[in-house]
Length: 439
Image (cartoon, rainbow, N blue to C red; front, side, top):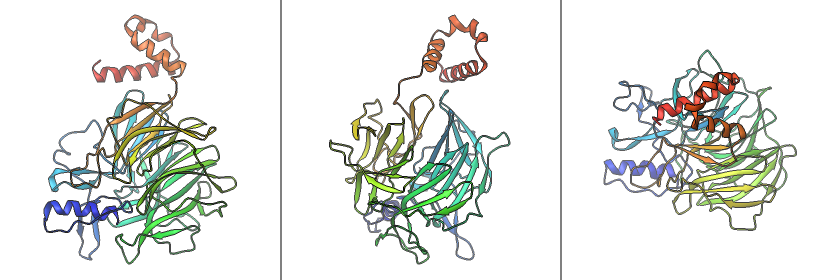
């Protein structure tokens, strides 16, 4: 059954002991997405979380959350959306404020809260976001009224303040309304794959499988799909390629990674199974290939992260297993050798599901947020606002020199003015982070 049913039932059980428990699956979000009211016409009104004290002070870090999006641009990671717990309403889950964008400086480890204007998207979880040439593109998600297929853009590198734009004049057949899908970026195109949402009403290529136990909204059933939809960013037009080979099964809460002209997809949820299969599609020929890995690899999982860290390696972290275990293991997939290798790290005590992962300019993966326990259990979900850092590539010579200069800063500070401006700026940024941490 749909995970959203179980999660809502779990919350309602806290308030009504007579409510029957409903078993769940990972079709829907697994979250009571927002406190909901009805207006005079019976339409649902979504409200954002306003916890006690929000107006009293300016937070210096984002709230804990799961189901959010994050993208990287240069040394910055941008975070939007998702949901969290609150004790003020019986441990229900609420969306985070939709106008809020958090920027994380990977050099200093400091957060900056920004307020975006314009066509601000509704508060959502399970959306899909990518950054292309300094612009954040947001598609899909799940909000208080159900799934959406709306598309938004947000220029990040601007001095005039952040301003959302809803893309209203897209040509072609848009994807169905859904969430927990994946995306690849190739040749100024966004290529979306899979997800969970409403049944297609048009001639969509690919397979849709109904989830017979999901909620029905507006008379429309929901389920999993393996559709591919391409958005040409210059033409602002949707299309669907005719693919060759055997495609992956329909799925949601999978993870995608782009390496060259290949779009990789690992795992995800399909009906009662959390998968550990690995496919790629050649985005020049649109041919699918399944990678048969001989040695023992990662467990089947959903709600994990899968991010390229070189032209030959993809980094996998965390997720949620079929037996509802939240994982903290990490793996490196080597493309040229077609093999998985466990990756040893210091965050083994920090399991995560439905988190985000961004690759930084100095060979580090920054994992933010997510849930640290079983999201579907009766206990309160342990959402996180912690940043986990994984060093997956050797440090550059510049990075080593910067760290050496900072380590001996008292002795070398008198010579800093002789450095090129960009290096001096980098040193000052790092020094600011050290001073903030009090070390």
